[in-house]
Picture 1 (cartoon, rainbow, N blue to C red):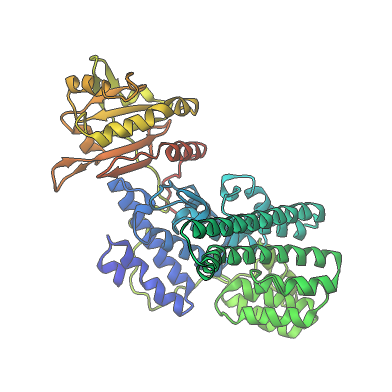
Picture 2 (picture 1 turned 90 degrees about the horizontal axis):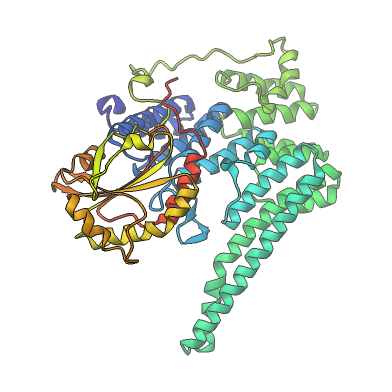
Length: 528
């Protein structure tokens, strides 16, 4: 009754999931994690908080995706992973690449976790066409992080080889080779720079050698990762070519490849013994349907029908939630037929009898986060002209809440966005700044633009702070207005925001993120 005792605290619903997962009760663990997510969604939408501003939100959802995988709910796992990728991103808490260092990973927020779990799920359930189509969308778009790009290319290449598209697979392999060369060039550049810095600092030979080694060490692991993904594709290519010697050589290097996938490749090249060994090892995890289904398949196609039937019966006991249309389960049709079972051989779900009274999940919050509607307002600029939110109906707009002419950082923020105004407009996005100043104060703000010209977007007065408070750009405890930046979409929904004690000045990031968010439909409020 951890969650029931504190129903408004998402983490209290999340924590029992740890116990259930240890017990391999993945359905109960997934229920707890979904409850946690729903409570978070309700809180975020009620209090206007962006998803990754909440501690543990991204981890809870990625773990939920893993448990959905264990249950065979591949479609739900893909849907959740894609939703995580769609969520708003912020340089402080949710980016795939590290801000300012595009070749390195950022924090483990929804963007990174979502992409990670999407690739995992699509590969695990052999959703080859979906991998290829997703690679042409925002869900698996190219990235500036070499090892992440290698993972993406390996997934796409694997899909092509699995579909018998050897030429396309070879094309992806060539891109991996280019990526490896790029990392080796980066390693050489780091070594050269370290040597030059050591020389400038008058380091001795021993110190210089150490500096070079320290600079190149991170690249060794990154290059190893790319080589492991290359080996995967080379193993797939060898299996397709029926080249047993090359396959044996490459599969030994494919350290990132799952046991299930390895077992399928070993079976393809005729090594039934190794295929069965790997499949058996992965099936020992217990309670997870995909490894067990793979083991049944390997046994059956290796001619061990009795053993396959025995394992199939174990699988059927935990089959209530599987997406039976997936290839890993469809291959088991001959086993089901052998047992005179229907095509849909899943059993009916029976809930555990020791879980107590659980509330309906719908009472805790929506299944997905959805952006909140922007509050209407009407404010006046320095020339006495009225501006309203309704003026922007049908087109996106960015609000910049600033603390008036006396705030030097605010003027700096406006000065940062001003030169980018045309770029925002080219993207179909208007800008407007909302000030704590009265109308007379706005005229003085105009004079503070460092270019000596008026700011290229309207400045309006909210001296009463009514709109600041409506948008929660206000510290209730200190009784002080804050800085705020908001993206409102064509439907009047708040798609992105930053509220802080300091102004948001990363205009280029916001331009990119605005384009990304506006190119996709906002997540819908859904129950299930």
